[in-house]
Length: 315
Image (cartoon, rainbow, N blue to C red):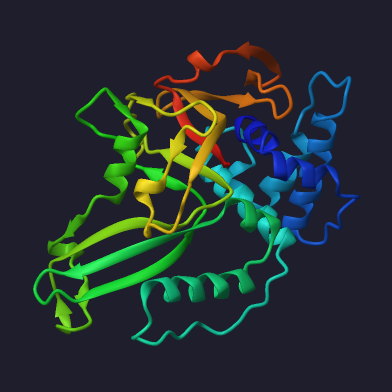
């Protein structure tokens, strides 16, 4: 929890917004979580404070999510998803509407825009504005060639790691993510044209890019009994991550991102420890946050086999 909070605390637009809030109402459990987070951020960024204990925030969060009430080890990405969802729910001004019905003859770009507009009406908050992008999923029947395209929001990108290499680049993980996958056997979907289950291919591309992109490196297997310790070389400098090759369309002139925070996991599936590495929004200097201990860090030390969550800002 400490590691993820430090990463979110260094998300500049989010912290600026939270520091401007005046005693937010806390009627629901999500609003209580938001209110405690506002108090914590204000305290963390006030001068003269050496360290703060987020016990009130943990108490508020575990009152909604009982699995976090104890001290058992939990997954940072799962916590981040639950936490952002609570912040979003506390701020959500969206209106629940009926499901969206789309005409079959719409082109992909128009379909994507309509689905995004519908999503933004029902999910309307600063959290959504900052962290949510849109994925394009293409399903193709190998028998008749019929193609089905859907567009879905995403809060982070969970990237697979190559099991055959101990060292690879983030771009290799992105290529694995968008690579066409064959769905066969039990995974075969029903083709709407053939009206029966068919061997198909599935692929992803990014339709809409978020302001803040969270990349989750899938180091743990589905059963979580093993951990991949590959070193993933990811861009660490200003405007160094270029996501244009993974875009659905060529309309984007620039999709450049800068790294500003990392959540590292040391240890194994049985036990471990999370540490945050964050870039100060004013000084540009990197620091390592290990619970209540803070150390200076260098850009050359950021890449390691412990990197688990990467936080990027679009520039």
